[in-house]
Length: 272
Image (cartoon, rainbow, N blue to C red):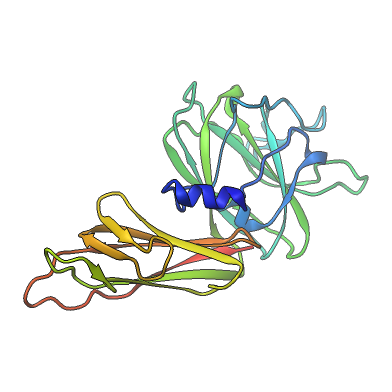
């Protein structure tokens, strides 16, 4: 909980999931998370504060190319575990600033083999080098809803790469945020120019606004903040129980004589 409020007070709303998991070296130690904890998870295949080592089952290929049959190797992997909500989980992977420009590899597996070994059978994997400054979708399918699975992330050839994961699809329930904007009159401080709603606003949620090029005078953590400058304003809502969140950005412009109210924009964010 503390991390959430620190993130908000430091003007970092929505920049990362505040209750994101920490991967483990060995699949038997993989932390069980919900899908929302993957959404916005920012990590590194070679983090400064820990060293990921080769942590799969010895003498078993972790990623076998379905066409060539080539078995890729792993060097500095980390593991997570999740319960499937749907028959698939599609994850957007954003990679940047790799040490050697090789990129990362990913694998998804059944939780155990019939003999109880970890990991189980391969579901899907991406074993070839991705390179840095790259985005792609990792397709984890087919899944059986309600079953437990494993995800592994590894630096290609031991490369160290910062990365962020986002849920693209495969989660059934959603938290939503919507914002409405009206033009701002020049020279006035205005209440009600911005207005937000969230699907699950209540005792288990926190929410707030941030801007990099506008100005919030008061009410950062209300639905209707007071602003006194045009700019881009971002509203974010967090569910403190599920770690799920949604975000929407709207642009406030200076009013003219024939301005009409801006259209309502909305976005969905997944809940695990």
